[in-house]
Length: 181
Image (cartoon, rainbow, N blue to C red; front, side):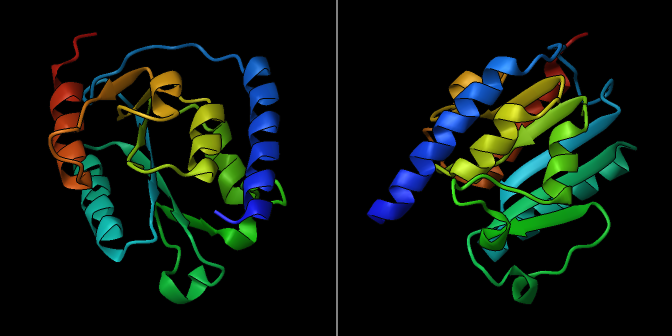
């Protein structure tokens, strides 16, 4: 990372820490059956990851869940890569402040919506996704073990044996079906 970007991200991390202290949310575990709304947060830079996420969103829609996904594209020209449509919103580097904090109505709405379950499909380090996941008002947050997710998510899944999004999704579905509440 370039030195200036590094400084900007550190300033963003300080801002996030302040906001996390003020965040109040009620944690409640939901299984797929009991969840009414699901938010899916992911890195949409890789077209394959976007296609896999589309299948997951379709799966939840077939389960009659209200689903919204938010993808981060590490580019300044995301409009050329994908177009937003029903159940899918995107943000890119144009939507980041000088502190690397994501902005925009789609981002704000995603953070403020009290989803029953928030699924963080990000498996790499990404401050903009960390920021959104950390401040989300979701009641139950699920993601891969490691990085910020160990602190932010209510349930983490170890994917060290297979670090692919497909494997993470299989595990998330499995464990969210097993939960009893």
